[in-house]
Length: 359
Image 1 (tube, one colour):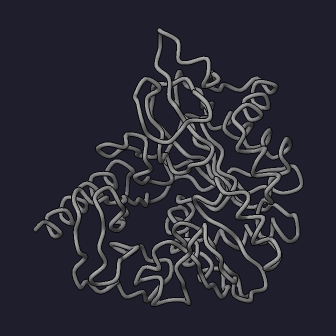
Image 2 (cartoon, rainbow, N blue to C red):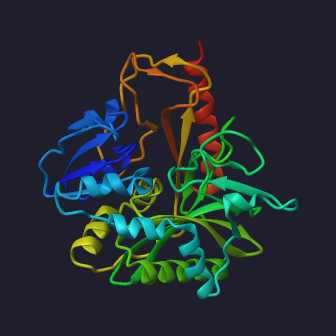
């Protein structure tokens, strides 16, 4: 199957497609060197005119959940392997999601209208459904930034992302990943994660209930992510991402399972057969953001001899690419016997790359 993949960054999904025996071509914001070495790719201008290449089907990745109108523009290109614009709008509406979870007795942070302002007690976040990946999320009392669409109560605790595959009003939990948000100036920006990550059985059971409730309420299909904070032993849902997520490739590397096949089966045949991935080696990735404006040096992408072997780094810019302060440079990856050691290896890898890119 020839599949078109569209998003801010499509490299991970394209490699997942290759592992599943598909033939991907991509439209994204970076058209990185390692992606271009494996499949056709062109830069995407999400606000400009473009003619999608011919394909048998298409799917979208990160940031597209915040652009349902763009998803609608692409609807005529080919059959969509994913959630349509109407589903996106409902599943990304924080008020509708909150109502769905409360109806099932599941925990979720309180919301407020922007016009109401933040209460004088507690901590609140200003968020927007027009952004993704934590971009633009700020403390409610901080000035500037992306105009928010709502305020959400801040819940203290470690952050996680649950990966599901859904179809026909049903869902299966694939696994839970630990997430690590925050860079200077953008405290809630997505920075990477490690999977699989252990959580208590009671919390895991409640996470499964979250997936089931959302799949029923919104008729979700395919791979999707649910971000949550673990507080008082319970998963407090903070966001729903109804598309291929950044953690998918981590679970694939850890289990040697091509999860894109589960995605296609769910979208085409409306069948859900995924098995939960827990235990075993942990795989992680860390996005390195530029601390200053830099020109990327000539660095060859890693050679790939086995699609399931974890590369040391990915999302490699072309030599000479100019990267502004605050923009992503590349991604480092690591695997280890335990999640904690995986985090330590990511820390060391990040420090080595920061030194390597220093002037």
